[in-house]
Amino acid sequence: GTPATVALVTQSHITMQCQGFSRPHVHALRTSGPHILPSHRCMVACLAASTDAGTRALTVPQGPQEQVAQAAAAIRSAYSSGIKRQRIELLLPLIGATDLDDWPGGIRQQFKAVQPMCESLLRYIKQIEGLQGPLIPEIWDDGDAVACYRSPKLALVIFPQASSINQLRKLTEGPGAPELLVIVNPQWESAGNPISEFGIGPWRKAKEEFVATFQTTQWLRQQRVYGDVIKVLYAHPGAWQVYVQHIKGLREKTELMTSQEGMPTYSQIEALLRARPESAINLSVSERLQAEFEFNRKSLGPLQ
Image 1: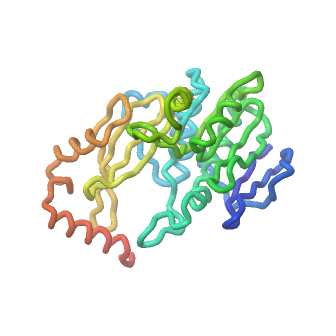
Image 2 (image 1 turned 120 degrees about the vertical axis):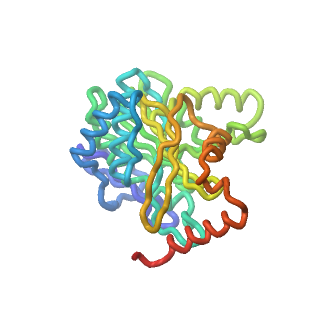
Image 3 (image 1 turned 180 degrees about the vertical axis):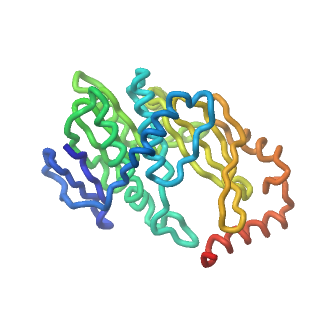
């Protein structure tokens, strides 16, 4: 069968399409946009890279198709190693961005970007031995765009919130728990926050312990640090890698700064940038402002 297609089609409702599956009775159904299917060559390359990812640098994915292929290979590698609760972090392609806000539509707009990536990811994952079978889509939270695809063997939850933890726990407990559960871009932030979304006291501890049972098996996140564009990449079973992106004219060049065990901290990234004389962090305030102005001008200007 074909996995469920999820789409955000209005400001007030998330609707799901099931092609060849049992349909939930409580949600409208509508066809979504085109699928993002990794090419055969792209998928084979990522599967091959996953076998020796611990010994050489990964390639930063160029676009959603390559990212889906890399994530699928990482999930498969981790699952074959016995990791049945996985967390992945996808870098979403910008859609509808403005000069002032990358996501003016908030989490619902982000859902429109992540949905075809997850759909394609599921098309691949459900081919793994023992995970085959139809998937049933569910809306867990319409307002926060939390959605779930599930079968007796496989489940994937998009944008789980702190308020979703009880549902996640129910999904993982009991004889009907899936063999593999993947959470995509969870929206909670607990580390380092004195006031946690998980509550206080024993309630916070119990939720944090549950969340810790999900192991990160793929991660791609981009951030700007003092004007430099940084990408942090991980794919099981390799090392965590930090890249800096140079923009010269309208061309981009990505340089690997480090490869290490464990997720790099912000202070570690700062130290890496300070060690590079050409990094924006080493410029004066006026030079940094000028560089930022040039970056924005070239980003917003017409193509040459």
